[in-house]
Image 1 (cartoon, rainbow, N blue to C red):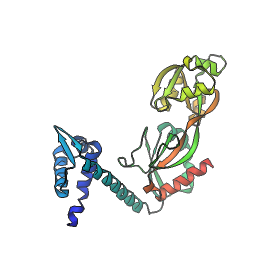
Image 2: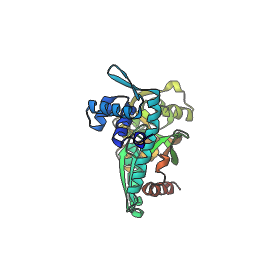
Image 3: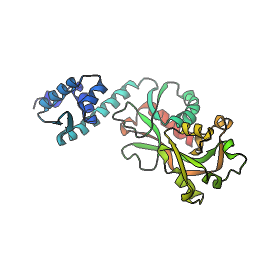
Image 4: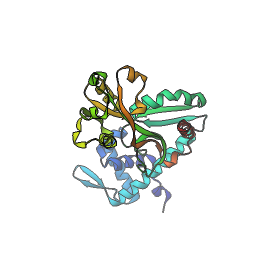
Length: 294
């Protein structure tokens, strides 16, 4: 068999990868800045070259065939290795660059205040920091590593290094307390504000403090911890937040910790695909992060 048939062009593979990921020519076209007809033509060219049907047309929509789904899995993995090899080659210059995703509030409250120490000993490394909430897709997003929160085993396909435990503490405003004793029983009578990514936090806190779950009055939910903290300052209720994210400015602006901190069921992790493990910039950053915990 001719090698050309076995090695489709990179442009055809990139179009196929995007179309397979979205199962939509329209969304693939938007992502690649092409017309929908251009995407359709390139998929047809690839199918003709391979001699197989990759997509099943259903009206105006498309769906991967079983062969297409298997081929997509291999292509995604191969493109990931190519991207990693390219990045590694580019980063062989002194230091290199690292594209890091981090949770917004954890990044601003915990990571950024410490980065001067990292740069003191790694001046040749450039960190590009991106705020992300939720799952990270390293095949679809141009990221090398991420700092995220979760439990043991949440990332079976990734390298995961535990950075530190999450200690949750209840917070209130001085106006809400109004001179009352800052006790768990007082909190149980208040409106409970939550962060969307940790809906079970209050239930764990009530159990930890031997309080009746039927007393819980769950209020608004927020995507960002920083927004929840602003809502607490505004008197909307009490919040449950990681203690590491409360700094001197928060206390000065009127946040009061109520009761003792509680060890959460979650921890903070550095995660990345195995293919990125030897990137010089990631190796330097990983060693520095783990040393912070030691």
